[in-house]
Structure formats: C-alpha cells, structure tokens
Image 1 (tube, rainbow, N blue to C red):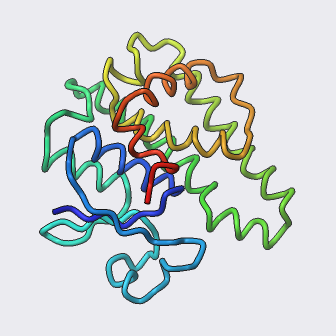
Image 2 (image 1 turned 30 degrees about the horizontal axis):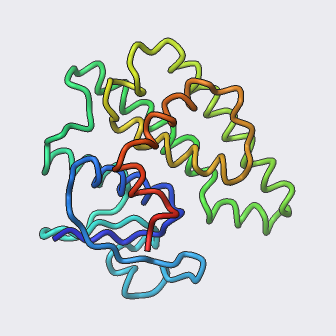
Length: 206
C-alpha cells in the first residue's frame, strides 16, 4: 500500500494526487497540517529532512519531491502513461512541467511568501506573487497557443497538465487575473471534468 503524506492546498501534493488518480492507484493519505508546523515534527523530518510535502511512502521507502514521485509512479506503474510516446514530446512535456515546478512554484510557495511578508509586508508579498505568476503564465500561454492537442502535450492528460492545474488553482485562490490566458483556461476546463482531477482537488481532501 502506498501512503501519501500531504496537505490539501499544497500544489506539489495536489500534483501527486492527480497522478495517483490517473494511474488508478489506491493509496492511504496522511495529512500534514502545514499551518500548524507539523512538517517540522521530528517524526516527519525523519521521512523528509527538508520538512516539506509531499512524501510518498512505498514498500522500498520514502520518496520526496513531487516530480520525482510522479516519475517513480510512471516507471513503477507504466500504464496509463503520463508522458507522451516520442522522445521530443516527452522532453517538451517535462519542460512545461519544470517551468511550473521550478520557475513559478518555488518562488510562490508558502514558506517563501511568509518570508517575503515578514520582511516587507503583505502588499509586497502579493506584488511578488503576481509578478512571478505573470512571468510564468505569459511563457506558458505563448508555448501552448500553437498546440494541436486537447491538453498541453497530448489528447489525454500528461505530466504537464498535472502540474498546470494546481498552479491555476492557486491563481484563482489569490484572485489573479487569468483573462489573458485563454489556452491555459481551456486546458484547465477539460482537466477538471475528469475524475482524477476532481478527486484530487483540495476541497475534496480529508
């Protein structure tokens, strides 16, 4: 049995929940309440010294970092696939995922936003948040406007869509203006109709 240590509104954990759902895998959830600093508890830091979610516990041990977890699931449970069949399309899919997970999300996650707020106040925090969100979404929209597939990289959801939807969820939550990004919203509309995305949504977590 797989066990996922997560937090409902963590976009990184949200990604893993979507991937588990698309793979049709059963798993147990172990909530880690980040707002109560449970990630710093010694019992959890033994699993992940970085004190962050998600962590997936497998029969071989713990895996942290959402992209590493999803790549593990893709290798350990290869069907249905979360990456396109050709090498070029897989690289493009990973590039979109990494733009979100490496360029947007790390600058806008909870601990960074809290630190910016402590240093410069709430207004500066939101200016920071919107700046990096806009920069990343501008790049994504430009990349995806010429797509010939229903989703980011294929006619079924892939790793890129798994990463996009949680980032859009955060943008909606902070009332970021998404009207300049029709392609991102079109993809999101398709994804959120699917059972795996519905079940993974933060509002549907224990």
